[in-house]
Amino acid sequence: MKKLIALLLALVMVLGLTACGGSGTTETQAPVATEAQTAAPTETEAPAADTGSTNDLPRNETLYFAGQQWGTVNSWSPIGTNQNNSMAIAGGPSGYRTVMFETLYMYNFMDGSMTGLLANDDWAWNDDMTALTLTIKDAAKWSDSTSVTAADVARTFDIGVEVNNTCGATYGAYIDSVEADGQKVTINAKLNDAGQPVNPLKVLDFLTGVPIAQAAWIDTVVERNGGDATKILNDAGDDVVWSGPYTKYYSDDQKVVLVRDDNYWGQDASMWGKLPVPKYLAHTIYADNAASEVALKAGEVDVAQLFIGNVQDLWEKDGLPISTYYEEAPYGVCLTMPTAWYNMNLPVLAENTALRKAIAMAVDYDTIIANAMTNQSPTFSEVPRSLMNPTDGEQALYDHDAVKDLQWAGNDIEGAKALLDEAGLVDNDGDGWREYNGEKISLNACCPNGWSDWQAAMEVVAAAGEKIGVEITTLYPEWSIYQTVFVDPAQTEYAIFMWSPEAASPSNPWTRVNQFMGKDFIGVSNNWSGNWGQYVNDEADALIKQIPLTTDEAELKDLYTKLTEIYLTEVPSFSLMYRPSLFHTVNESVWTNFPAGDDGRNIPPADCTDGYGIAALYELELVG
Image (tube, rainbow, N blue to C red; front, top):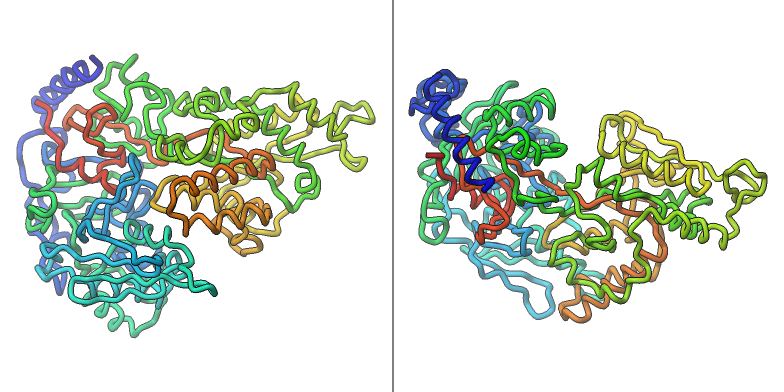
């Protein structure tokens, strides 16, 4: 019924826009571009730009986005850094954004599958998992009409290691080399002292997380920058060669527009067999989330990657043709778990497991979920806490019955008090606060200022402390300060602080478990990688290191169950909510047939651009 009402309202809105004309007109009118916008790269031939104004793109050919691009694009180079080009160059838990630069495979977080994009569906390990082979699709072409080859894959990895870009920094520790033989790619894993691969799971991440660049273009960039790594990383990439279905059309500090490449190789029967439906992908650069939400409500945005409190009000109360992936709460797919980390540099926390667990037991998570998340998260009663996100695939990876007695749903004040009393953490001087080694236990709970849902969560943590006699005060430094403190492995400034572990990828949940308890990150300066609380457990670390080399499903489940037991017993951190890593809210006043959880298509709510979520672009329909 909601879909029917939305479509009827959408028809009314489209007819109104047509009658009014202006920027909302649905007449097919080609936009004009300036000479700067249409100039073809020196070594590639871009699709011809149309005539008209980019401020008047034909609405019935343009898919508008919000919540992805903030600020002016810095670069179009897929081998650089600091591109600030989220429409074309971005990777995340939902898979890489492949509208312009393509990966070997597309990740689908709904079922963990990897679908061939530049590569055929033939990837395979050798017997000891030291080498992975695959073949590049014969049909795959660059925008200059040359073939995508295995040499392009090898050169993409090599330049990453040479200049230490994101690819090199992320995968150089796990991949020793990439070899090319015609269309055959061999990825050789880095080996440990025992001759085993360091981590086969991270090799799989490479398949879905790295955009492949053309070897000849890479060599051009290296040559014009004299081989200087810093210059290569900051190259503007204006002459870039691409393999994806869209390319750059217009970009300034107000808007970014990509235009469809009608010569895109993906029309081949070995891939999509057709072009994506929208001719243009456009993103107005809004001032903030509030401005983006206003544009979404007005029908000026089709796909919004925004957290919108009480999102259901948009259709239930406002009657707008807006929808989410699921019609009922939590409305999206929750893949990550914003977490409160205990600082183990503080003896009061490092030496008192009972204190850590008592605080975690006392927190009223239902209030956090209702207020901070406006119920866009399952509760911990619905999905009991573990190391896993609430997806069916991850939930099946551990024995629920084995850890049932260790789990807590929250707001257990009496249980938390009893735990502290038993541990001898009591109020000896009658001031209402418990003590440790003769001193009042006084902690702070921190997150960046302005991150309103996180701040609301920290307030609930502080309130829980007061209820059990533990003083917890909130502290909200500016992001510019926060980001320098929580990544410092020796910091003692923040006692309890928030950050999110990884969400979904071929290597998860292993990567997330390693972030919670792995020793690899202990003492690492500028630590953005994991274990931000500096928790050390040798038994857990040994189990974590077994997982990447374990292929037997029963053994794998046993390892994850043991790790969950350790985590729930030791409580080095505690997750505050389940949360979508991407929000996927769509306005169906112009476009419809967006992915939905009940449509049977298995297209993830990845904003029509990321991983296998890009499949949505091939199935969109105009309203009416």
